[in-house]
Length: 190
Image (cartoon, rainbow, N blue to C red; front, side, top):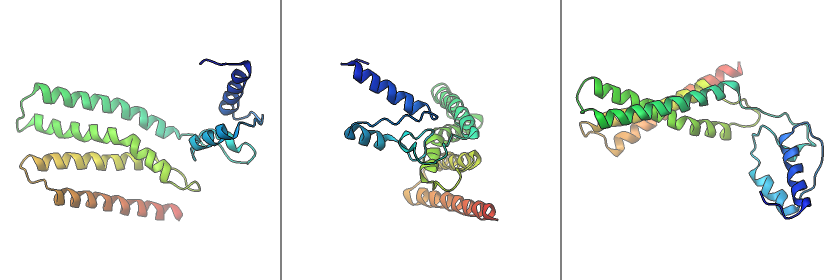
């Protein structure tokens, strides 16, 4: 990074020191335009929240099961998309092992691809007063999407997949998930 003055370098260093060190109690007053732009990029759920050092807020961390889930997801996504590529480019489409391997790989690949997005939506849409959903819920929701993709691919083979059928199938999966989440939340309140 190119600094035009020593003062700019020191401001950048102080900002990083305050932003990266949660125990730092140094209060730095930024220029109003910089302060507004920093506030715009500070998420609601953050590991560190430098704008609210005066308030008595607890710092939130990513749960350990979410970190393990995301690492496993990346590995499985790379393997399943790679396997799907090899299957499609090297094998003849036959009824039997190749077809079932295709369905397993497409389901796994789509599930692993959408899992980080589903986790992001769960984190963003969960109220601050409630705990984040466990990794099992996020995995289940992504498996629904992967299963939906595999069923749509299966229905496309005999050319029976249509927009109403795909919509009905999506509504059915969403309904099942809503009922499961409602049941889990009622059990958690007891």
